[in-house]
Image (cartoon, rainbow, N blue to C red; front, side, top):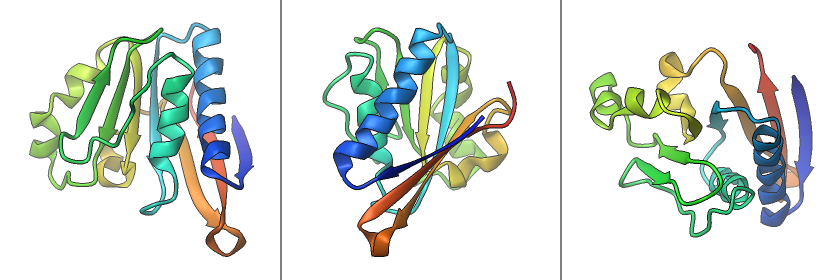
Length: 146
């Protein structure tokens, strides 16, 4: 699976996240790891906000200092990771990363660049990059394994 979307606004980026969540939930997928890639300020949190909104979860913000926010009050659990400050395997394990991955629910991970060796083989990769001189976005969604 490889899909490419364009975004001209934060709302567009949220809509792409929402579409992915609706597809996973509608297909009754019990577990998914969504690895987000992209530079600072490109829209990873906006994508996550749209993803969560599709499942009835509101008040989503980046868990930069807490590393993970668990949203379990929507239609399906979402575990929102921000790996910006993760630099060592011990840091990752100390937050219970493996425990979250063992649960049913959707794990969505910002700054996946920092944990590449730990991304599950069946992850959905979302790469967001700037276009149009920085005002637009290209959102590429890929799944290499099923």
